[in-house]
Length: 101
Image: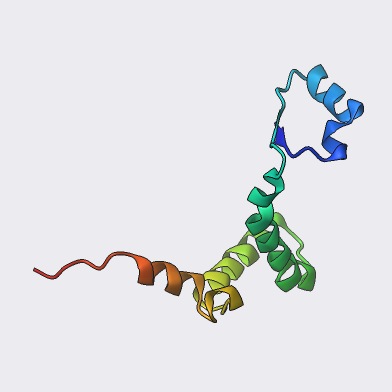
């Protein structure tokens, strides 16, 4: 299991349970939290713009909703960090253009 070095992950109780189950432990180095910032922000957005606004009755409903949301997120939702462009527009406009023969 890989975790950061937060107190909840370095406690004797937490580490003891991992050792009991013979789970190997690795921890990110100091400052490793920065690696997760993008994903943490993404999931915060997903929760506030989709999950918290809807009540789902089944796991399949959640899967369908998340597929719709990520299509919206990548194809239609403007992002301020991308100067109002969508992630798809930025990504696909940066790909090298094929040279016509």
